Image (cartoon, rainbow, N blue to C red; front, side, top):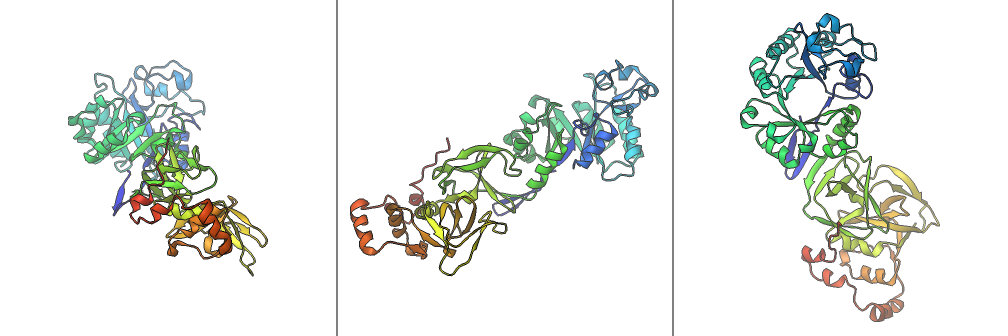
Length: 462
């Protein structure tokens, strides 16, 4: 279950439940003990399985009504007794299992849990399946280790009476499969992932109902990047290991809306974006240097913060300055930084927002180019040669151009760095009088209202 704990405007995300779809069908034959074991080893909290009845009424674990796809033998489950079905082998040598065999096998492994799906006909047959499931759950004391679900509303309603303490989910292919009466007796909805929009999830949560999502057996791993961005409570997936990694990463983050919704890329180079802020595995469209973008949500983890441009692009905020901070960064871009007299070396860190990891050093005699500037609590940090960051006040800075010198001079006194190499006054005055009589930034600095300070930077996401 995904929980949101709210402190002020911050939301602490506790992740979502990972459910192995038929176990782990990408590593072992589906719905075998090997497949279930692989799913649990990969981090799944539950393994999902399907139930059918054999000719003699035994609850059989099988997704299909016929065993041809998994065994190569044309055998109908409902027309075959269990003792015959037990003779059928899957590709790993395991037999077709009954639910009783499953419970017996995992009875003393309390960390293993299961989602039991009843397979029913349109006429809700077999009608005794729910009673048989309930009897086995109670016999093996699995009440706290199972959830039940079905596309059959009647089946779910029956479980609400037979196993009232066990979570119950209605499976849905379409929104029309959900009705108000059924919602009264279910814990939540397990719906096709393509239908689980933020609006739907919000509506279900407002009704105090959980939302699980599933994809078909052809599910693509890349879909998890988008699904994990939603406020789902659980996912039935073929990729338990990857989903668990997203879940673990998400559970260590905080999410908050941005008070200032535009920011400028304070860098001399394009800045990479990612498609997901939890696991930064896939790159999105890069951000253009010194361009201003509209942003919405901020996600922060122990290493980085990422701001959302849209659902497919999240930008590392190390390269973004919000509001008037963007103006304060401008004069230093493309300048150079070197050691002060007497310094031996200075460490460069991977991130100014989490400055623990040293990645390089600024050494004597080196004049490194300032390739990005980040204001943190009013304190400028410099990226040098795109290799690493250090606090600006630790260095000696040479501004790149006469215009940069004017922009620096026009900063408010308490915003100026003092470790700047400036030309002599008699060289500087003709430049200010003749070449650039008034910086384009001057009018904004004369007006203290933040809205005017941001006016220079118009968002251009597209």
